[in-house]
Amino acid sequence: MRGKITVVGAGNVGANCAMWIASKELADVVLVDVVEGVPQGKGLDLLQAGPITGCDVRITGSNGYDATANSDICIITAGFPRKPGMSRDDLLLANYAIVKEATENLVKHSPNAILIVVSNPLDAMAQTALMVSKFPKQRVIGMAGVLDTARFRTFLADELQVSVENVTAVVFGGHGDTMVPLVRLSSVSGIPLTELLSQEKLDAIVERTKNGGAEIVKHLKTGSAYYAPSAAAVEMAESILKDKKKVLPAAAYLEGEYGISGLFVGVPVKLGAAGIEKIYEIKLSPDEQAALRKSADAVKELVEVIQSKQ
Image (cartoon, rainbow, N blue to C red; front, side, top):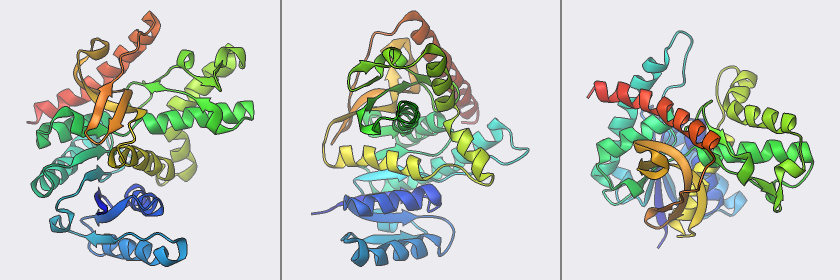
């Protein structure tokens, strides 16, 4: 019996999630969006690609949540992009309302699902989904670290002219310019980065990674990244659905790990059929711990805004 994944939001990120899921034949897909005709049209278009690409899954588009019933995984991508004149708090509260409503509907129809949150601001939206769903913390996960790590690996591979498959890297912290790419724990086939690149080069790549999303927005001018974010969310979904137990960086709800409590922060986790099956607590240097604390404090500010509106 095939699994079932609901994707909320049929924009660029959501539609590409559906495409990656179909291309891997992971599960049947329900694409949900409030805009009439958009999820139906994109779902039908993707479905008709199946005979060409050899992807034999069912893709359904809907403006409601009845079709999402009994989903194994729900990926939430819906939300507004930040517009000129819109403050961070404005964006936060607008997307809080969207993620809150989506979560309520998903929980109603799929009480045993695992939630993967992609909507921004990522860490605060994952916190929203946890608060609203009242799910166990291991069943609500934020997608950030897989994407940020992919960017870090891409820039390192490009600089060194090696295969991205040989680059192992990890990024901690919140999804934003306070993220913490850990050079000390990154390597090329086991070779430490400090043996391959100067500190100046490493610092530049770390900084580019922190601004990876903004760099793409600058090029696109009217939008943000969607191919890599959607691929990252689907890698997480695949590890859960197939119980692969991949160790990936993701936004997890911490309760004392790394000295942080009550917040979603990006850390290495094991993803399997139960969701987050283990949080890996690595001994950090004082500088690394301070950077992670700074990142967590930035997340806390956003969460406090949400909590003030409860």
